[in-house]
Length: 348
Image 1 (spheres, helix red, strand yellow):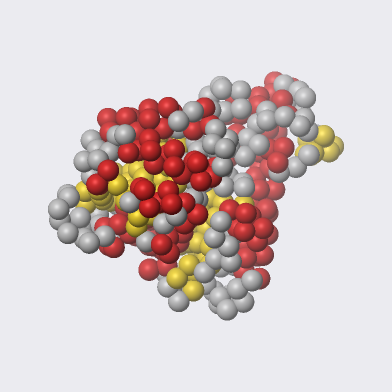
Image 2: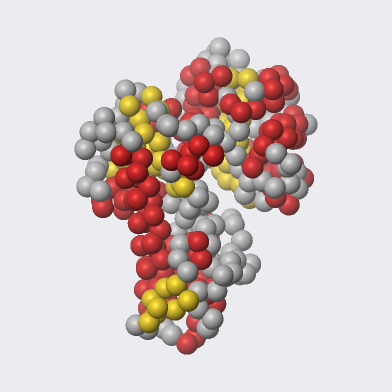
């Protein structure tokens, strides 16, 4: 890329967060941040998030490379309208000439063309990440587990080779799994759970989520989570135990913390099993991948991908290792990093 701009900012605009990675013109990642953006509450949430990004990074004059999944939220009548409204909002804050939109096989598009070719733009952030990873690891399985979803993308001969491109196709073949490390309701993992030697029916309510389990197990740092918990209380262990207890129709003080942690481990096993099964289904459609082809993990929940690799007796690589990134948050927010680096490589 020419040095007409010192920096390229990659934006991944989701339904719950905005992630931004800033690269210099040599492809060195300088900053990676995440801003809470509950887009389902209104497009003004995106405007507020953009202003917060500018306040932290001062990047309003960067070349701005955009990918998104936020078009799916239910404030928009459909995904086409979502793409258009998100880009219209961004266009109010960033010079139109500095905006490019990642459109996968359609290339980099200006906003007006991105709206026209919205199907190549909507929910393609996984493709940016997988394409970047495939440059370094030609054959493998890219597994990005975020707060809400899990992407499972086969890589072959240096290319991502998914069987589906849109979310409907990907959910059909389990290359997209709606399970994540923070926001997934525990009731989505099971309708009952073992406690005190009996199988207890669970309340069909969003009383607790996977973030409660992984915090109790020490694999998520409570202070790092920007999402609200199910009851709006903090993510420290005693609050997590209270929320999980509520699912069983009881209170956390009716058992010790070790019992609640054991129950959290049980839920964690259900989620890991769900992801492992999906990985096996995707692998079953790609017999050409060698038995020792690695799993490459990204996302805040990549510890689940690492555990799945161990279960399946496959090597595990971390997104940060592949990039040799010195920024610890790069793997947490891989799509934002990917669009920044792909733009740095590909734009004239």
